[in-house]
Length: 268
Image (cartoon, rainbow, N blue to C red):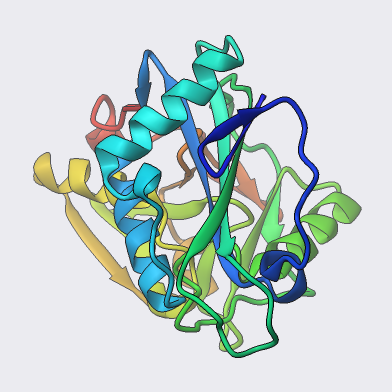
């Protein structure tokens, strides 16, 4: 079952013209529903509001608040009999036209598939050679620059890596292929700032909140590859999982979360 503009449908014939297909005029969210709740619903909704504002879109009523978002997507998981679901919510501008937006109304589609957490360590990571991150007014959200991550995933696959790390054009570390990246050094937690072109991940925000609540110093900034490689421990984080990094290139790291964060980061 799918949710198309709030209606449960078994299959979908997509109305044309479609501005999402024609111009990429929209964005998407990947969300996790488990234990009868939508993980990090408030963070997801805040990013959706920011993305909608940047694209001059209005969120539909079914997605207009964090509570509505959770209720709406819970109905999809339940309709598919999925106690744990990975959900994809795609929004795009309604109507046709060319580049000039004809309306601020959005259409949307939500799909669901089974979710099984994978928090096994990342055995083999390395820096991307063919693609770099690009900071833009929309780089914080998911969708408008998805081609970057498709290229990076292709390179990761071709090189036989478990994860790939993107840097910006100046060589500053930005993010992993589908997750935020963090590292620890001298009991300080580091992560690239949004100026690197990385996505404003919902789990990224949660990791920093929980670390700060535990009294851990967090530093965001533009960091070189060398600063990452000098870390004591490295991990990636997205809404689906937190995973320790065992190696980047030939350099090995402690394959676990920093001890000062142990027990502080959960999947809620």
